[in-house]
Amino acid sequence: MDPAPPDVEHVARLQIVAPPGDDDRAAPAQQHDGEIVVVVHVRLLGDAGAQELERGVGARAPGSRRDPGCHRRQLRRRGVRGAGAGGSGPFPDQERRARAATCRGERERGDAEHARGGAPADGWKFHAGGVMPHAPSRDNSGGVSLQGPRRPRRCPGMRAAFCTAAGAIDLRTVAPPPASDGDVTVAVHACGICGSDLHYYAGADPPPAVCLGHEICGRLREPLGDLAAGAAVVVEPLVACGRCARCRQGEPNLCARLQILGSMRPGGFADLVRVPATSIYAVPPGLDLGTAMLAEPLAVAVHAVRLAAVGLGDEVLVLGAGSIGLLTAFAALRAGGRVTVSARHPHQAAAARALGVDAVVADDEAAVRAAARARRPDVVIETVGGAAATVDLALRVVRAGGRVVCLGKFTRPITLDPLRFLMKEVHLVSSMTYSRTEPEPDFATALALLAAEPRRLGALITHRLPLDRVDRAFATAADKSSGAIKVAVVAAADPQKL
Image (cartoon, rainbow, N blue to C red; front, side):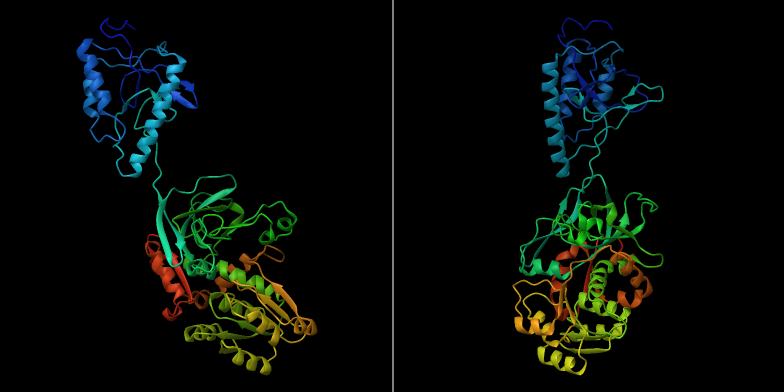
């Protein structure tokens, strides 16, 4: 190309994103510090052209709302054109590195401006420094194309709920979960409030630093095996190593490196959640997502009933009639047991009867002991936890040689009579979430039960509130006088579709 006029001492470098059809030509792209550097030779027509270029470059600073189209037309009239294939730019490496670092800083400030709602509109962009924020595309001929718009795509934020203190739920806008090997993204439709979530909300346990929620149902954002994007799924919220002896035996719940969504990793009170691909279970055909949300707490109940070895004709006493207690009673019924439930509130007693239990008693020690004398339980499953003395009560009422399974999450040390424990030869077992041992994973059994009894079990979801009202959802779940059994926080755009 012709040399620059003598009154212009340098050749400007511009980052140019041009619309289709532009006939400007760019110099070959150069890889530099992980970014693509394109050097564009600009021929300026005297002092007026240089001044016009300076005004054009300065007016299009990151975050500016000024329409850049006028600068494009002015520069084209002034003879701003791309260089031929031989140009490589007059700047040495040191200056190019400095300019690249400056451009990166400008882009970061632009990202901050975008987060505040001040991002510029798509169009031509002229930034001094000449470092493109992305690799240029290639046209059909194999050459480098500068067709635009080429502004970096910025993913919008998503909603996520955090427990910040006792009685305080904060809905924030956060970055979407990043992609990682072995994980998939699920668009959350709904997430249930569990008793452990309410422990954080009540101040009984320190709240985690991550988004809460582990009773998750939703739709895949990407294909997974035979499942297409958009497939309805539920999430087993366990993140285990997959290599230790317990994991190889199908017991990821006992992995020493276990992490649980909603307490150690971001959970489901959000628009999106990133989960291990091995934690995905397809929702059976005909089962709606609203009911499928119960798969996680029902899997907890299935696991406890399996540990208790409930068989045909066994007398089973379930202490507590919250959502876990009611689902445990249902699982014990399906295993062949004769089930008695202790319930504190009238709506809980009504729900237990609707599930088909054999008897409901008041949730006090005298009533439970009287019922046990009439029908001595082979199995007692404790689901209350907290500060209750229910483990000692279970030990008192179970038959000699019987089985006691503890599901409740206690907030203080439990006490029991050691002599009674010795003399009765009771099998005392704790139950930790769910496993994948034979004959099938607890989650698979739970989904099968839900598919068989969707109306009866779905009735346990008494309240559905949108994610924007997650604070109200927690207040409702914590107030048993509200009639709440299971409260669902709905992230889907249309709650009626659940």
